[in-house]
Structure formats: structure tokens, C-alpha cells
Length: 312
Image (cartoon, rainbow, N blue to C red; front, side):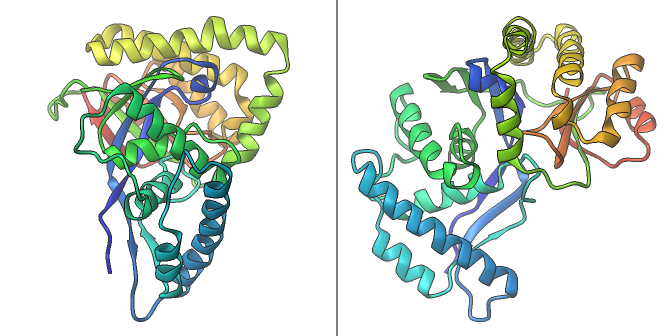
């Protein structure tokens, strides 16, 4: 048995902000993917995945009892497949902010939901919100709190624009130009990030009035502008606002930035060779970069390998 592939995602803009109703823009990233599988000779890794899935199945059974109107899974079939040794075969790195648990949640929903909303039907805003709510409940098993966006992106495999918590829509993004000098790229921090502790730090910071004011007047403001600039193809404004956003993050989200990157982050802002931002919750994993000149950024960041996600 081998199920369909579900891809990783990248939240270009909106990390943390979407908790406080900023805009967000999430795009599929087809470089990594995962699928449910059963094999004759499972590896140690496959067995570990199977054990983790058994715990997830128990959680889903409980969720179904608590919220029967929200989810309806074929738990018997799921447990039967797990007994046969089913696991999630994935190339998506865990703790890297590219949606490893999101792809898993999408795969489980796709195979075992008994009244699933399919990708082929007319996806009204109500259906998108319903899917997002289901996925949020499912994914909270992994993170403690989830927006449901990662699985939604992985499940639909299309860019998603978040206008606010209750207003999301499928969107088109400007087509890539492989000749373009500008790029969005990933840098591997070499550290695995843990989502839950980072979200806890953020929630703790929200108790501070000054932090809340900064979030509303600067972080959310520049996030919203970046989303509008990117979708509108306004590169000049996009880089100007990404620089402001990068500065706000460096000054106010220090625990989420791995220590060795504080100087690298600052250097980008000072030289304008590139601007860095968090990819997911931070604390490690990937760091997202934006540059108007990819060659210049590569020279400036020669100690790192840049993985290009999108070219302008």
C-alpha cells in the first residue's frame, strides 16, 4: 500500500501574526513530500513512525467522541492499517518550519475521513474554514495549538491567503521568473526547532502591553503590507516592508532566532544584500530570506547553502 503524496509548505508571511489576526500567505513547497505506506520489512524509522501514528489514532478517536459534529473518521480501518504496520514515509524534515506534521494530518484526513471535503469540489469560504478548523483540532496533537493552516495547504496544494482567522481563500501568486534576480530562499540553521516552546514564549510575551502594542502597530502592519505587495507584484514596496519586518523580528523575537544568526540577520539589514525572517515558529529549522539580487546574497552568505523557493 502507498497513499498519495502530500507536500511541505512555506508560510511566506504571517508567522505569529496570524494568531493575532494579521494577514498571511502560505504556499506549497514541492521539494519535500510524504505518503502513508505499508511495507513488508519496515525500517526502525518506519516502526517509530507507526508507534507515533498509534498515539495519534488514539487521540483522533477521543476527538471524535468529544466533537462528533466536527470529525468522522473510519477509526476501525485506521487501526487495522496500523496493525499492518502503516507508517508515514516522509522526506519533510521535522522541526524545520515546513509543515511535516501538516502533511501527515492531510494524509490521514484524506484516507480516513468518512465525510471529507474533497479538493475537487467548489471550495467556498465556509468549506475552507471548516477544513481549517478540522485540521487545527487534528494538528494540535503535535503542537499543543495549531491554526490548521499547514495541513490545509498540504491537503489542497495551492497558495492560501489568510485575510483574518475567519476569512481565508485560495489565491494565485505572481508567476515565477527564473531569469529574475530577486528570490525567496531558505537557509538551514542546522538546529531542529520545537514549535510548542516557541509558541509558549510568544503567548507569555502577549501578556506584556508593550509587546502587544508593537505587534499591532509594527509586526502586523508590515506583515499585511508584505502580503499585499507580494500578491500585487510590487517588488519595490515588498523589499522595503520586508526590511522593516526583518528589523521588528530581530528586535522583538530574539528567542526565536538561533543565536549564531543574530549577527547574520543584522548584516542583511545593514547591507541590504538580503533580509531574513522566521520560517514557521523559529527556534531553529529553516530561516527564510528575501533578496533583490540572488548572486549578491549568495556571496554575502557564502558560509550557507541557499535553497531557492521562488524567483522574481
